[in-house]
Image (cartoon, rainbow over all chains, first blue to last red; front, side, top):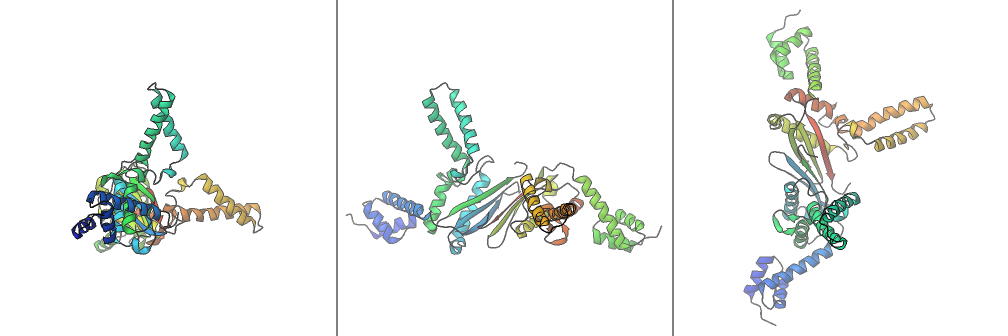
Length: 202
Length: 202
């Protein structure tokens, strides 16, 4: 086992916000490699987040964001487990950032929170369009099927809030951003619903 | 024709905000009776408002109201004819008051803006419930029909935003309040849509 210096632990703590013992263990596991230790901590955080996401969320906040000029407005409900977390600045910031994300998304985008909410009708309509587009290439049916599935995942990442690239950091999805908040705030967090009004559009 | 003093005109102007000549004419028509003159001006304002409500509304504001504590939030779109009116403090106040009204209304209330938006399904379901309630009184069919129609108008005033008693002045409906704004701002104004989220409810 490599020996880990207090300086390394300190640096890792500063970069990840994780506890001292967690950082020490991650550095030992990574044999002193800082980047590797960060990855280890992130994976653990993600795993902890996945575990938390089954828990009941009955608290939370309804928040809004009105774009300057009042042309676009968003209302959003984000739930968590306790009133305590709902009242933290971190949670309020999360709600605000999510509302801003929905406001910034183009009108066609951000229609549903979860993939499961996409109505069968919308899905089969999209599938039909993609199929006829793919068929016009003249490729064999087995290839067309793959093209359709590939483009369908683009449809999801365009229209499903949790699957969109997060506007403030396009390296992660909105779902990843929520998961990172679950890791930080140590509670299950769910986007319950949102509404987006743009003046003069439907 | 009775002679109208400058003092009377001044008082009427202060109480109604109408123009000097309008006030003078109303006082002449009311033969100097101030209350009567106010009624005359209000009727004219209402008539002017009715006339304006056919005009196209493509401008306006999206506004929101979040109840302290973040348990209830409202998003609303109110349209008017010009950007100029949309940017006035009066219009902003109107939007804010309407959003507050929707937030204060109980969850079952304020489901639609106009009576025309109530889906046939909801209406026939309500009619059916009211009918069976009325039939349990054992009254003749002709009476039952009248009871149902009477209670149906209560259903409308409970669920249709424009027909609800306005929260800040229950003497008038929300629709009356919007009409008074049309009179003041001299543009057609329409509530386009709203969303109301209450944490933990549907």
